[in-house]
Length: 327
Image (cartoon, rainbow, N blue to C red; front, top):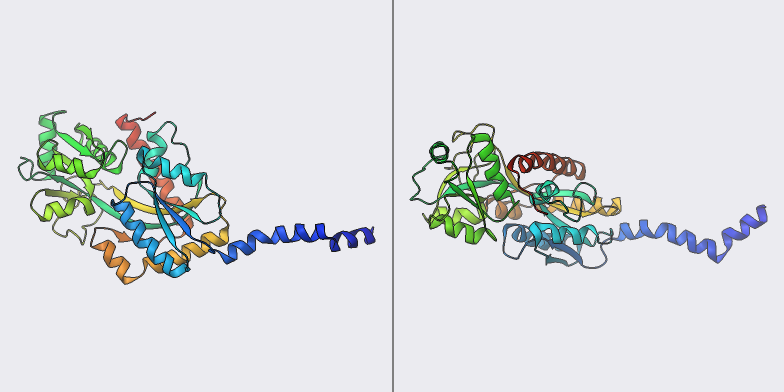
């Protein structure tokens, strides 16, 4: 018996199995050894794409491998997310997730993936408030006046969004439920056409990212009524929070997070998390995002996962209350 065991341990077959057993660990330790694909589930040029390109470039410098930004838009962010969920869990494909990937768990009957279980969280990237804007010609010059106008004209006040189920849509639905009003939703294919119609008075208001909306506010083409964060934004210090403007307790945050497929080796997740921590603490990165109304936000994988779980629960209630669904 001893002789058989000894022969087995010295045979080529035993050696092959031994090498296979240590290969994953060694591969995880050596990661990365080839280019990394960072999937952005939206078109180029938008807020998420900008965040990904800044972070991708800095990660490339730190990890010594090219980080390729791969735009995979469609279905409210679902096409890109589904592609990453089904990718090999080896650390070479990652997803820049957004608030929509929390919303979509309730909004879509079949999103194709599960944000809770199909991904391993690595870190938050950015977070920031939306801004409630209207045309300067709109009679409502404040949140209180907007609420009064909506109550006096049920269904006649309209809000634009960048698409069904996006944070720009659900932020308005949350506003409706908390203010006790009912505005009519007008969805668009992106922020640009939606803002154009708000400026023209074709839609009354819009909740949009500060990156998209504030340049028009500074040019006098839009009026900012409030931001949706808990505190005022350094990028717009004169604009009150929603609570300060008359709707206590209201808060909606637009965020980006980095996720990898579930099953990605823990050593890879850890190395990527530490690299992101260094990147997001760089002064130039923090300044770049702050100028656009974002805060560079590193969090541990555990904290990231807990935050996203809370967001899924929060926005799920808003989706159900609004009655919005997509088959």
